[in-house]
Image (cartoon, rainbow, N blue to C red):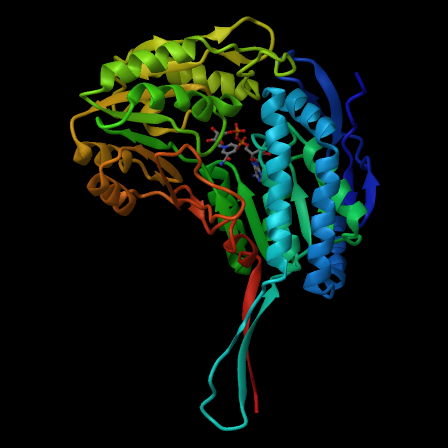
Amino acid sequence: MTEHPTPRMLIGGTWTAGSGGATLPVINPATGETLTHLPVATRAEIGAALDAAEAGFRVWRAVPPIERARILAKGARRFRERIDEVAMVITLELGKPLAESRAEVTLAAEHVEWAAQEARRGYGQVIPARDPGVLQYSVLEPVGPVAAFAPWNAPAITPARKLGGALAAGCSVILKPAEEAPSAALILAESLLAAGVPDGALNIVFGDPPLIGRTLAESPRIKGLTFTGSTAVGAELNRLAAPSMVRTTLELGGHAPVIILGDVDVERVARTAIPACLRNSGQVCTSPTRFLVHASVYDQFLDTFVSAVESLKVGDGRDPGTQMGPVATDRRLTALAEMTDDARTRGATVATGGHRLGDTGTFWSPTVLTGVPADARAATVEPFGPLKTVARVDDLDEALAEANRLPFGLASYAWTHDSRAIARITDEMEAGSVAVNSWKPSFPETPFGGFHLSGLGTEGGVEGVRAFQRLKYISRG
Ligand code: NAD
Protein backbone atom coordinates (compact mmCIF):
# COMPACT_ATOMS: atom_id res chain seq x y z
CA MET A 1 0.00 0.00 0.00
CA THR A 2 1.23 3.51 -0.76
CA GLU A 3 2.08 5.77 2.13
CA HIS A 4 -0.70 8.02 3.41
CA PRO A 5 -0.28 11.59 2.12
CA THR A 6 1.07 14.16 4.58
CA PRO A 7 -1.42 17.03 4.79
CA ARG A 8 -0.04 20.48 4.12
CA MET A 9 -1.65 23.89 4.25
CA LEU A 10 -2.02 26.08 1.19
CA ILE A 11 -1.36 29.78 1.57
CA GLY A 12 -1.01 32.10 -1.39
CA GLY A 13 -0.23 29.27 -3.80
CA THR A 14 2.46 27.72 -1.58
CA TRP A 15 2.03 24.35 0.11
CA THR A 16 3.43 24.52 3.62
CA ALA A 17 4.00 22.18 6.54
CA GLY A 18 3.48 25.15 8.85
CA SER A 19 5.95 27.03 11.00
CA GLY A 20 4.55 26.40 14.47
CA GLY A 21 5.73 22.82 14.83
CA ALA A 22 2.46 21.64 16.41
CA THR A 23 0.66 18.78 14.68
CA LEU A 24 -2.50 16.71 15.10
CA PRO A 25 -2.82 13.00 14.32
CA VAL A 26 -5.19 11.73 11.64
CA ILE A 27 -6.60 8.41 12.89
CA ASN A 28 -8.02 5.43 11.00
CA PRO A 29 -11.28 4.78 12.90
CA ALA A 30 -11.35 1.13 11.78
CA THR A 31 -8.00 0.31 13.40
CA GLY A 32 -7.15 3.18 15.75
CA GLU A 33 -3.84 3.60 13.90
CA THR A 34 -2.35 7.00 13.24
CA LEU A 35 -2.27 7.51 9.48
CA THR A 36 -0.40 10.81 9.40
CA HIS A 37 -0.11 14.16 11.15
CA LEU A 38 -1.40 17.51 9.96
CA PRO A 39 0.05 20.95 10.70
CA VAL A 40 -1.63 23.33 13.12
CA ALA A 41 -1.87 26.87 11.72
CA THR A 42 -0.35 29.64 13.82
CA ARG A 43 -2.07 33.01 14.19
CA ALA A 44 0.48 34.40 11.72
CA GLU A 45 -0.41 31.72 9.18
CA ILE A 46 -4.12 32.45 9.53
CA GLY A 47 -3.25 36.12 8.96
CA ALA A 48 -1.17 35.20 5.91
CA ALA A 49 -4.12 33.24 4.53
CA LEU A 50 -6.28 36.36 4.91
CA ASP A 51 -3.67 38.46 3.06
CA ALA A 52 -3.47 35.83 0.33
CA ALA A 53 -7.26 35.60 0.00
CA GLU A 54 -7.53 39.36 -0.45
CA ALA A 55 -4.83 39.38 -3.12
CA GLY A 56 -6.28 36.24 -4.74
CA PHE A 57 -9.74 37.78 -4.85
CA ARG A 58 -8.48 40.74 -6.90
CA VAL A 59 -7.03 38.34 -9.47
CA TRP A 60 -9.84 35.78 -9.59
CA ARG A 61 -12.77 38.19 -9.76
CA ALA A 62 -11.20 39.67 -12.91
CA VAL A 63 -11.12 36.28 -14.65
CA PRO A 64 -14.11 36.19 -17.05
CA PRO A 65 -16.87 33.80 -15.94
CA ILE A 66 -16.44 31.62 -19.03
CA GLU A 67 -12.79 31.13 -18.13
CA ARG A 68 -13.60 30.45 -14.48
CA ALA A 69 -16.08 27.83 -15.69
CA ARG A 70 -13.43 26.20 -17.88
CA ILE A 71 -10.90 26.08 -15.05
CA LEU A 72 -13.36 24.64 -12.53
CA ALA A 73 -14.56 21.99 -15.00
CA LYS A 74 -10.95 21.01 -15.69
CA GLY A 75 -10.27 20.82 -11.95
CA ALA A 76 -13.28 18.53 -11.49
CA ARG A 77 -11.98 16.31 -14.31
CA ARG A 78 -8.55 16.05 -12.71
CA PHE A 79 -10.18 15.19 -9.38
CA ARG A 80 -12.22 12.42 -11.04
CA GLU A 81 -9.04 11.02 -12.59
CA ARG A 82 -7.68 10.46 -9.06
CA ILE A 83 -10.78 8.57 -7.87
CA ASP A 84 -8.89 5.46 -6.66
CA GLU A 85 -6.51 7.50 -4.55
CA VAL A 86 -9.18 9.84 -3.15
CA ALA A 87 -11.60 7.00 -2.34
CA MET A 88 -8.87 5.18 -0.43
CA VAL A 89 -7.92 8.19 1.72
CA ILE A 90 -11.60 8.80 2.52
CA THR A 91 -12.06 5.19 3.59
CA LEU A 92 -8.88 5.23 5.66
CA GLU A 93 -9.67 8.52 7.42
CA LEU A 94 -13.42 8.13 7.83
CA GLY A 95 -13.98 4.38 7.72
CA LYS A 96 -16.76 4.11 5.18
CA PRO A 97 -16.85 1.31 2.59
CA LEU A 98 -14.73 1.94 -0.50
CA ALA A 99 -17.74 1.80 -2.83
CA GLU A 100 -19.35 4.63 -0.84
CA SER A 101 -16.11 6.61 -0.97
CA ARG A 102 -15.94 6.19 -4.73
CA ALA A 103 -19.54 7.39 -5.05
CA GLU A 104 -18.63 10.41 -2.92
CA VAL A 105 -15.72 11.34 -5.21
CA THR A 106 -17.98 11.24 -8.26
CA LEU A 107 -20.65 13.32 -6.56
CA ALA A 108 -18.07 15.84 -5.34
CA ALA A 109 -16.82 16.26 -8.93
CA GLU A 110 -20.43 16.74 -10.04
CA HIS A 111 -20.86 19.54 -7.50
CA VAL A 112 -17.87 21.40 -8.93
CA GLU A 113 -19.08 20.75 -12.48
CA TRP A 114 -22.54 22.10 -11.69
CA ALA A 115 -21.07 25.24 -10.13
CA ALA A 116 -18.72 25.62 -13.11
CA GLN A 117 -21.67 25.62 -15.50
CA GLU A 118 -23.55 28.05 -13.28
CA ALA A 119 -20.56 30.42 -13.25
CA ARG A 120 -21.55 31.44 -16.77
CA ARG A 121 -25.10 32.37 -15.81
CA GLY A 122 -24.62 35.28 -13.41
CA TYR A 123 -27.39 37.27 -15.01
CA GLY A 124 -28.56 40.68 -13.86
CA GLN A 125 -31.64 42.51 -15.13
CA VAL A 126 -32.42 45.56 -17.17
CA ILE A 127 -35.07 47.57 -15.34
CA PRO A 128 -37.29 49.90 -17.41
CA ALA A 129 -36.25 53.46 -16.59
CA ARG A 130 -38.55 56.31 -15.60
CA ASP A 131 -36.72 58.87 -17.67
CA PRO A 132 -35.76 58.77 -21.33
CA GLY A 133 -32.13 58.05 -22.13
CA VAL A 134 -31.50 56.37 -18.77
CA LEU A 135 -30.22 52.82 -18.52
CA GLN A 136 -31.09 51.01 -15.27
CA TYR A 137 -29.73 47.57 -14.56
CA SER A 138 -28.56 45.21 -11.84
CA VAL A 139 -25.44 43.04 -11.86
CA LEU A 140 -24.23 40.18 -9.70
CA GLU A 141 -20.77 40.57 -8.19
CA PRO A 142 -18.74 38.18 -6.04
CA VAL A 143 -19.02 39.11 -2.34
CA GLY A 144 -15.27 38.88 -1.67
CA PRO A 145 -13.01 36.52 0.30
CA VAL A 146 -14.97 33.62 1.81
CA ALA A 147 -14.23 31.53 4.92
CA ALA A 148 -15.40 27.94 4.45
CA PHE A 149 -15.59 25.26 7.15
CA ALA A 150 -16.21 21.64 6.20
CA PRO A 151 -16.88 18.74 8.59
CA TRP A 152 -15.46 15.24 8.45
CA ASN A 153 -18.55 13.30 7.40
CA ALA A 154 -18.46 14.20 3.69
CA PRO A 155 -14.78 15.10 3.28
CA ALA A 156 -14.98 15.46 -0.52
CA ILE A 157 -18.58 16.57 -1.13
CA THR A 158 -18.74 19.39 1.41
CA PRO A 159 -15.48 21.07 0.34
CA ALA A 160 -16.56 20.60 -3.29
CA ARG A 161 -19.89 22.32 -2.64
CA LYS A 162 -18.26 25.23 -0.88
CA LEU A 163 -15.25 25.66 -3.17
CA GLY A 164 -17.38 25.13 -6.28
CA GLY A 165 -19.99 27.72 -5.29
CA ALA A 166 -17.58 30.36 -4.03
CA LEU A 167 -15.03 30.03 -6.85
CA ALA A 168 -17.74 29.93 -9.51
CA ALA A 169 -19.08 33.21 -8.10
CA GLY A 170 -15.62 34.77 -8.42
CA CYS A 171 -14.76 34.75 -4.70
CA SER A 172 -11.48 33.69 -3.16
CA VAL A 173 -11.69 31.13 -0.34
CA ILE A 174 -9.94 30.13 2.86
CA LEU A 175 -11.07 26.56 3.51
CA LYS A 176 -10.71 24.74 6.80
CA PRO A 177 -11.37 21.10 6.03
CA ALA A 178 -12.05 18.77 8.93
CA GLU A 179 -8.91 17.85 10.85
CA GLU A 180 -10.30 14.30 11.17
CA ALA A 181 -10.44 13.70 7.39
CA PRO A 182 -8.36 16.29 5.53
CA SER A 183 -6.90 14.53 2.50
CA ALA A 184 -9.78 14.52 0.00
CA ALA A 185 -10.10 18.30 0.25
CA LEU A 186 -6.37 18.65 -0.33
CA ILE A 187 -6.50 16.52 -3.47
CA LEU A 188 -9.45 18.59 -4.69
CA ALA A 189 -7.42 21.76 -4.07
CA GLU A 190 -4.44 20.29 -5.94
CA SER A 191 -6.73 19.46 -8.85
CA LEU A 192 -8.19 22.97 -8.97
CA LEU A 193 -4.77 24.61 -8.72
CA ALA A 194 -3.40 22.41 -11.48
CA ALA A 195 -6.38 23.40 -13.63
CA GLY A 196 -5.55 27.09 -13.29
CA VAL A 197 -7.11 28.51 -10.12
CA PRO A 198 -4.63 31.32 -9.37
CA ASP A 199 -2.46 31.66 -6.27
CA GLY A 200 -4.37 33.05 -3.32
CA ALA A 201 -7.81 32.35 -4.78
CA LEU A 202 -7.84 29.11 -2.80
CA ASN A 203 -6.17 28.76 0.59
CA ILE A 204 -6.31 25.97 3.16
CA VAL A 205 -5.55 26.05 6.87
CA PHE A 206 -5.94 23.45 9.62
CA GLY A 207 -5.48 23.19 13.31
CA ASP A 208 -7.46 24.63 16.18
CA PRO A 209 -11.06 24.95 14.87
CA PRO A 210 -12.26 27.52 17.44
CA LEU A 211 -9.18 29.71 16.85
CA ILE A 212 -9.47 29.54 13.06
CA GLY A 213 -13.25 29.91 13.22
CA ARG A 214 -13.11 32.95 15.48
CA THR A 215 -10.24 34.66 13.62
CA LEU A 216 -11.89 34.31 10.22
CA ALA A 217 -15.47 34.98 11.33
CA GLU A 218 -14.44 38.17 13.17
CA SER A 219 -12.20 39.45 10.40
CA PRO A 220 -13.74 42.37 8.50
CA ARG A 221 -11.72 41.13 5.50
CA ILE A 222 -13.97 38.07 5.20
CA LYS A 223 -17.16 38.86 3.27
CA GLY A 224 -18.81 35.45 3.11
CA LEU A 225 -18.86 32.53 5.53
CA THR A 226 -20.05 29.00 4.87
CA PHE A 227 -20.13 26.33 7.56
CA THR A 228 -21.42 22.77 7.74
CA GLY A 229 -21.55 21.12 11.15
CA SER A 230 -23.38 21.35 14.44
CA THR A 231 -26.02 23.97 15.26
CA ALA A 232 -24.00 25.13 18.28
CA VAL A 233 -20.86 25.92 16.25
CA GLY A 234 -22.86 27.38 13.35
CA ALA A 235 -24.72 29.73 15.70
CA GLU A 236 -21.44 30.82 17.29
CA LEU A 237 -19.78 31.57 13.94
CA ASN A 238 -22.89 33.46 12.85
CA ARG A 239 -22.74 35.56 16.03
CA LEU A 240 -19.04 36.31 15.54
CA ALA A 241 -19.58 37.30 11.91
CA ALA A 242 -22.64 39.47 12.54
CA PRO A 243 -20.86 42.73 13.46
CA SER A 244 -19.12 42.73 10.05
CA MET A 245 -22.45 41.92 8.30
CA VAL A 246 -20.85 38.87 6.75
CA ARG A 247 -23.12 36.83 4.48
CA THR A 248 -23.43 33.37 6.06
CA THR A 249 -24.55 30.02 4.75
CA LEU A 250 -25.02 27.53 7.58
CA GLU A 251 -25.82 23.89 6.92
CA LEU A 252 -26.45 22.41 10.35
CA GLY A 253 -27.84 19.22 11.77
CA GLY A 254 -31.22 17.60 11.25
CA HIS A 255 -33.09 14.64 12.74
CA ALA A 256 -34.86 13.53 9.61
CA PRO A 257 -38.38 12.13 10.00
CA VAL A 258 -39.71 9.39 7.71
CA ILE A 259 -43.50 9.08 7.47
CA ILE A 260 -44.63 5.67 6.24
CA LEU A 261 -48.35 5.27 5.60
CA GLY A 262 -50.27 2.01 5.27
CA ASP A 263 -50.71 1.96 1.48
CA VAL A 264 -47.12 1.18 0.46
CA ASP A 265 -45.12 -2.02 -0.08
CA VAL A 266 -43.76 -1.73 3.43
CA GLU A 267 -41.24 -4.55 3.14
CA ARG A 268 -39.67 -2.87 0.13
CA VAL A 269 -39.58 0.47 1.95
CA ALA A 270 -37.91 -1.20 4.96
CA ARG A 271 -35.28 -2.93 2.82
CA THR A 272 -34.44 0.10 0.69
CA ALA A 273 -34.25 2.25 3.83
CA ILE A 274 -31.16 0.36 5.01
CA PRO A 275 -28.57 1.64 2.53
CA ALA A 276 -30.17 5.08 2.72
CA CYS A 277 -30.16 5.41 6.49
CA LEU A 278 -26.95 3.54 7.31
CA ARG A 279 -24.83 5.03 4.53
CA ASN A 280 -21.66 6.44 6.09
CA SER A 281 -22.73 4.72 9.36
CA GLY A 282 -25.66 7.14 9.52
CA GLN A 283 -23.28 10.11 9.86
CA VAL A 284 -25.10 12.19 7.28
CA CYS A 285 -27.11 15.29 8.13
CA THR A 286 -29.95 14.10 5.87
CA SER A 287 -29.90 10.53 7.17
CA PRO A 288 -33.44 9.10 7.53
CA THR A 289 -33.65 8.66 11.31
CA ARG A 290 -37.08 8.95 12.95
CA PHE A 291 -39.34 6.37 11.34
CA LEU A 292 -43.03 7.17 11.94
CA VAL A 293 -44.95 4.15 10.74
CA HIS A 294 -48.70 3.75 10.41
CA ALA A 295 -50.12 1.26 12.93
CA SER A 296 -51.53 -0.95 10.15
CA VAL A 297 -48.02 -1.80 8.85
CA TYR A 298 -45.90 -1.09 11.92
CA ASP A 299 -45.14 -4.69 12.92
CA GLN A 300 -44.37 -5.74 9.36
CA PHE A 301 -42.07 -2.75 8.89
CA LEU A 302 -40.23 -3.29 12.16
CA ASP A 303 -39.67 -7.03 11.52
CA THR A 304 -38.27 -6.45 8.04
CA PHE A 305 -36.22 -3.41 9.08
CA VAL A 306 -34.66 -5.11 12.09
CA SER A 307 -33.76 -8.28 10.19
CA ALA A 308 -32.24 -6.24 7.36
CA VAL A 309 -30.22 -4.25 9.92
CA GLU A 310 -29.05 -7.47 11.58
CA SER A 311 -27.88 -8.92 8.28
CA LEU A 312 -25.55 -5.98 7.59
CA LYS A 313 -21.87 -6.78 7.43
CA VAL A 314 -20.00 -4.27 9.59
CA GLY A 315 -16.24 -4.02 9.18
CA ASP A 316 -13.21 -2.25 7.77
CA GLY A 317 -14.26 -0.19 4.77
CA ARG A 318 -11.39 -1.65 2.76
CA ASP A 319 -12.87 -5.17 2.90
CA PRO A 320 -14.97 -5.77 -0.23
CA GLY A 321 -17.87 -7.36 1.69
CA THR A 322 -18.22 -4.53 4.20
CA GLN A 323 -21.59 -2.75 4.10
CA MET A 324 -21.03 -0.41 7.05
CA GLY A 325 -17.83 0.86 8.61
CA PRO A 326 -17.02 2.30 12.03
CA VAL A 327 -18.18 5.68 13.28
CA ALA A 328 -15.65 8.42 12.67
CA THR A 329 -14.40 9.27 16.14
CA ASP A 330 -14.44 8.33 19.83
CA ARG A 331 -16.77 11.31 20.31
CA ARG A 332 -19.43 9.66 18.15
CA LEU A 333 -19.01 6.33 19.96
CA THR A 334 -19.49 8.01 23.33
CA ALA A 335 -22.48 10.01 22.09
CA LEU A 336 -24.18 6.85 20.75
CA ALA A 337 -23.55 4.92 23.97
CA GLU A 338 -24.95 7.77 26.08
CA MET A 339 -27.96 8.16 23.81
CA THR A 340 -28.77 4.44 23.96
CA ASP A 341 -28.37 4.29 27.76
CA ASP A 342 -30.54 7.35 28.16
CA ALA A 343 -33.29 5.86 25.97
CA ARG A 344 -33.12 2.53 27.85
CA THR A 345 -33.34 4.26 31.21
CA ARG A 346 -36.41 6.13 30.05
CA GLY A 347 -38.16 2.91 29.03
CA ALA A 348 -37.31 2.50 25.33
CA THR A 349 -36.74 -0.96 23.85
CA VAL A 350 -33.51 -1.78 22.03
CA ALA A 351 -34.89 -3.84 19.13
CA THR A 352 -31.39 -4.58 17.90
CA GLY A 353 -27.82 -3.36 18.47
CA GLY A 354 -27.14 -0.85 21.21
CA HIS A 355 -23.52 -1.71 21.93
CA ARG A 356 -19.96 -1.23 20.77
CA LEU A 357 -18.58 -3.90 18.46
CA GLY A 358 -15.16 -5.27 19.42
CA ASP A 359 -12.51 -3.22 21.16
CA THR A 360 -10.46 -2.13 18.16
CA GLY A 361 -11.52 0.94 16.23
CA THR A 362 -14.81 2.76 16.78
CA PHE A 363 -17.47 0.29 15.64
CA TRP A 364 -21.04 0.68 16.89
CA SER A 365 -23.66 -1.97 16.20
CA PRO A 366 -26.45 -0.68 13.96
CA THR A 367 -29.18 0.10 16.47
CA VAL A 368 -32.97 0.30 16.31
CA LEU A 369 -34.89 1.75 19.24
CA THR A 370 -38.66 1.58 19.73
CA GLY A 371 -40.96 3.12 22.30
CA VAL A 372 -38.61 6.09 22.72
CA PRO A 373 -40.26 8.75 24.89
CA ALA A 374 -40.36 12.30 23.52
CA ASP A 375 -37.95 13.62 26.14
CA ALA A 376 -35.20 11.04 25.46
CA ARG A 377 -32.04 12.35 23.78
CA ALA A 378 -32.58 9.99 20.85
CA ALA A 379 -35.95 11.62 20.22
CA THR A 380 -34.65 15.18 20.39
CA VAL A 381 -31.02 15.25 19.19
CA GLU A 382 -29.77 13.80 15.92
CA PRO A 383 -27.87 10.58 16.66
CA PHE A 384 -25.47 11.25 13.77
CA GLY A 385 -24.63 7.57 13.72
CA PRO A 386 -26.13 4.13 13.11
CA LEU A 387 -29.04 4.61 15.52
CA LYS A 388 -32.63 4.79 14.29
CA THR A 389 -35.93 5.13 16.10
CA VAL A 390 -39.19 3.52 14.97
CA ALA A 391 -42.53 4.79 16.31
CA ARG A 392 -46.13 3.80 15.68
CA VAL A 393 -48.54 6.51 14.49
CA ASP A 394 -52.30 6.23 14.07
CA ASP A 395 -52.86 8.80 11.33
CA LEU A 396 -51.25 11.50 9.21
CA ASP A 397 -52.05 14.24 11.73
CA GLU A 398 -50.07 12.43 14.39
CA ALA A 399 -47.23 11.70 11.94
CA LEU A 400 -46.93 15.33 10.83
CA ALA A 401 -47.11 16.64 14.39
CA GLU A 402 -44.30 14.29 15.41
CA ALA A 403 -42.25 15.05 12.26
CA ASN A 404 -42.50 18.79 12.97
CA ARG A 405 -42.05 18.51 16.75
CA LEU A 406 -38.33 19.36 16.80
CA PRO A 407 -36.73 22.73 16.10
CA PHE A 408 -34.82 21.18 13.17
CA GLY A 409 -35.90 20.99 9.56
CA LEU A 410 -33.32 19.75 7.08
CA ALA A 411 -34.36 16.60 5.19
CA SER A 412 -37.64 14.72 5.53
CA TYR A 413 -39.08 11.67 3.84
CA ALA A 414 -42.50 10.16 3.24
CA TRP A 415 -43.78 6.97 1.65
CA THR A 416 -47.37 6.85 0.42
CA HIS A 417 -49.27 6.88 -2.88
CA ASP A 418 -52.25 8.77 -1.49
CA SER A 419 -52.26 12.06 -3.39
CA ARG A 420 -54.15 13.96 -0.68
CA ALA A 421 -51.65 12.78 1.91
CA ILE A 422 -48.75 13.75 -0.37
CA ALA A 423 -50.24 17.22 -0.83
CA ARG A 424 -50.49 17.67 2.94
CA ILE A 425 -47.00 16.31 3.58
CA THR A 426 -45.30 18.50 0.97
CA ASP A 427 -47.26 21.51 2.21
CA GLU A 428 -46.98 21.06 5.96
CA MET A 429 -43.54 19.52 6.43
CA GLU A 430 -41.23 22.01 8.16
CA ALA A 431 -38.08 20.96 6.32
CA GLY A 432 -35.88 22.39 3.58
CA SER A 433 -36.09 19.14 1.62
CA VAL A 434 -39.08 16.78 1.32
CA ALA A 435 -38.50 13.48 -0.50
CA VAL A 436 -41.69 11.56 -1.26
CA ASN A 437 -41.26 7.92 -2.33
CA SER A 438 -37.53 8.50 -2.69
CA TRP A 439 -34.48 8.31 -0.46
CA LYS A 440 -32.65 11.08 -2.31
CA PRO A 441 -33.01 14.48 -0.63
CA SER A 442 -30.54 16.46 -2.76
CA PHE A 443 -28.44 16.61 -5.91
CA PRO A 444 -25.84 19.16 -7.05
CA GLU A 445 -28.49 20.92 -9.17
CA THR A 446 -31.14 21.15 -6.43
CA PRO A 447 -31.25 23.74 -3.64
CA PHE A 448 -30.37 22.39 -0.22
CA GLY A 449 -30.79 24.15 3.08
CA GLY A 450 -32.34 23.84 6.50
CA PHE A 451 -35.26 25.50 8.24
CA HIS A 452 -35.17 26.68 11.86
CA LEU A 453 -32.09 25.41 13.77
CA SER A 454 -30.96 23.40 10.74
CA GLY A 455 -29.43 26.40 9.09
CA LEU A 456 -29.46 29.53 7.07
CA GLY A 457 -29.19 30.01 3.33
CA THR A 458 -28.85 27.49 0.55
CA GLU A 459 -26.15 25.33 -0.96
CA GLY A 460 -26.45 23.53 -4.28
CA GLY A 461 -28.63 24.54 -7.19
CA VAL A 462 -28.48 28.00 -8.72
CA GLU A 463 -28.68 29.34 -5.17
CA GLY A 464 -25.42 27.62 -4.22
CA VAL A 465 -23.54 30.10 -6.42
CA ARG A 466 -25.83 33.08 -5.67
CA ALA A 467 -24.97 32.63 -1.98
CA PHE A 468 -21.56 34.09 -2.78
CA GLN A 469 -22.76 36.96 -4.95
CA ARG A 470 -24.14 40.39 -4.14
CA LEU A 471 -26.48 42.47 -6.25
CA LYS A 472 -25.56 45.97 -7.43
CA TYR A 473 -28.04 48.35 -9.03
CA ILE A 474 -26.65 50.78 -11.60
CA SER A 475 -28.33 53.69 -13.34
CA ARG A 476 -26.63 55.51 -16.18
CA GLY A 477 -28.13 58.74 -17.36
P1 NAD B 1 -17.78 19.27 16.41
O1 NAD B 1 -18.70 20.43 16.58
O2 NAD B 1 -16.70 19.05 17.40
O3 NAD B 1 -17.07 19.30 14.97
C1 NAD B 1 -17.80 19.36 13.76
C2 NAD B 1 -16.94 20.10 12.75
O4 NAD B 1 -16.95 21.47 13.08
C3 NAD B 1 -15.47 19.65 12.78
O5 NAD B 1 -15.02 19.49 11.47
C4 NAD B 1 -14.75 20.77 13.48
O6 NAD B 1 -13.45 20.97 12.96
C5 NAD B 1 -15.61 21.97 13.20
N1 NAD B 1 -15.59 22.96 14.26
C6 NAD B 1 -15.75 22.74 15.58
N2 NAD B 1 -15.67 23.90 16.25
C7 NAD B 1 -15.46 24.88 15.34
C8 NAD B 1 -15.33 26.28 15.39
N3 NAD B 1 -15.44 26.96 16.54
N4 NAD B 1 -15.13 26.96 14.25
C9 NAD B 1 -15.07 26.31 13.07
N5 NAD B 1 -15.20 24.97 12.95
C10 NAD B 1 -15.41 24.27 14.07
O7 NAD B 1 -18.73 18.08 16.32
P2 NAD B 1 -18.58 16.52 16.19
O8 NAD B 1 -18.35 15.85 17.50
O9 NAD B 1 -17.64 16.18 15.10
O10 NAD B 1 -20.06 16.28 15.81
C11 NAD B 1 -21.05 16.79 16.72
C12 NAD B 1 -22.34 17.02 16.01
O11 NAD B 1 -22.18 17.94 14.93
C13 NAD B 1 -22.88 15.79 15.33
O12 NAD B 1 -23.57 15.01 16.24
C14 NAD B 1 -23.79 16.37 14.29
O13 NAD B 1 -25.03 16.66 14.88
C15 NAD B 1 -23.12 17.65 13.93
N6 NAD B 1 -22.46 17.54 12.62
C16 NAD B 1 -23.21 17.87 11.56
C17 NAD B 1 -22.68 17.76 10.30
C18 NAD B 1 -23.50 18.11 9.11
O14 NAD B 1 -23.26 17.61 8.03
N7 NAD B 1 -24.48 19.02 9.26
C19 NAD B 1 -21.37 17.31 10.13
C20 NAD B 1 -20.60 16.99 11.26
C21 NAD B 1 -21.17 17.12 12.52
